[in-house]
Length: 318
Image (cartoon, rainbow, N blue to C red):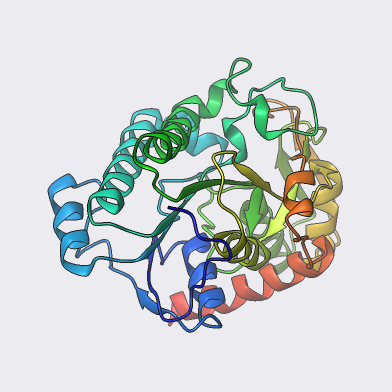
């Protein structure tokens, strides 16, 4: 059952998905907490394998679990790989949450996504707007899998008294992002496109969509800090949004990324590409009342993300 404040020091902590952008940020943040960190590579344990996950949990018995593993991607990936996005994410959530319960984990945090909210829900998005309307069609399979994970956490909490909690991060960016030209999220896609245009001296960069949708962006290390804060100080069935509480149009954001990269050419918009949800801004008043707010400005964060991209690209080439 719940213990607040929850002391992480000396606990065995499993970060599921430690090689992803979110999981890696959690690993960096947990280094300051004096924990015994548990991680396992995908080649050693496929989180979609129920028997494998059960066996690993039975052997390792982590006291704390951050469930950050997921199959993720941008609009094109979500809309193209619909079966994989629902299948993989349902299995990951079901296997890890159940195994954490069976093995007696003291606390678990499930990381959802802001795409679980209805496409046309009132803005900013409050936690209680989930399941009040239709989802954005392009990422509906992913959203449904994440909603199932949220409901599993609620069910295990209500039936077994498990100290399991849900958090909903907004759009994240930073070190370790996926820069795939087709399947990445908007921030890494723009960083890569503007960088390549600068290197190749291209006079114009085309940005997908109309540029009018509004998005909120949170630097991934801020998100990790919020997760650790909530793990130590929060225990309730109600999920908690994690974001900045501020948004920006994609067009404005593209100009900000171009500036950080040092690209000075023209920017145009491909209206034939999907925009997705018109606006996605989280209501972070619950998080603020719990004593946390973002520290990294968007301009600073994009600069850090670009430097990480240059470093990671160089390492990949070596």
